[in-house]
Length: 280
Ligand SMILES: [Zn+2]
Ligand SMILES: [Zn+2]
Image 1 (cartoon, rainbow, N blue to C red):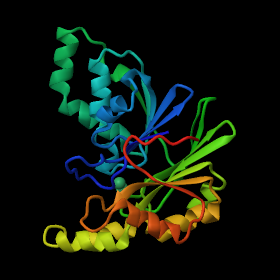
Image 2: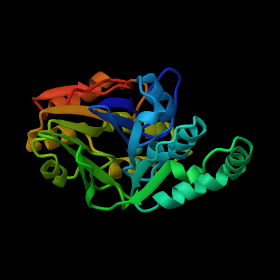
Image 3: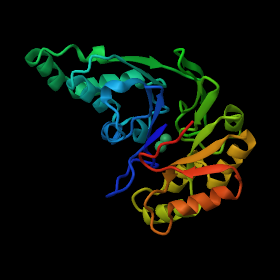
Image 4: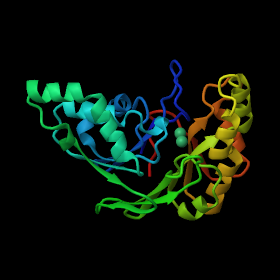
């Protein structure tokens, strides 16, 4: 597994991490989970080719998880890669792709005529999913659990069964005890994480432009100590922290997330970073 983007939220800052996306390499079969800004570049930086991307699964329709889905498919298309990618996402996926098509209709139609490209729609097969089985392709079996990420209803944690191994990705969620059952004995749990004191600082700084930000963030994300609790209850093999909220806030560094999570989790712990590889 390669973490392509590990920051929480859609902001960018110089030299820092990209918004969320994760790549799962199962014996050369590539699954991409989420497609935040920067994903196309990060796939290449991680040493993969866009033609390797067979399956994409979007966990929810916040922009830090789906903003670059259309541009990724378009870049694959203009690179003359004939492979059709299966794209899974919660309801709204087809609308998102149709909206992207409309935004690039001029370019797409020009290239089809001028360069005799195949239709853009040949590039992907969109499938909308909700809770339960997402896909089973004999390489992996993926199931989804609806998590708590208000005001978004369709937000899903994903469990990948790969032979006798398993990986769970929490997506964005408030502390949700059912996630520990869903993650039971997983070899790897990739969980989002929120540092409460850091979030308070950030929200004070942004109070004038986003007066409801503290409520929005704390209602929809999981404090460090609760991330450790989920991992402990689930008895996972390896907890990997991801989607850091806040990122690049003065006075809060990755080591602070680590120490907070350590209070409730004694097992193997990694602080995620862009392009970090995790063995399963
Ligand atoms: Zn997010
Ligand atoms: Zn979100």
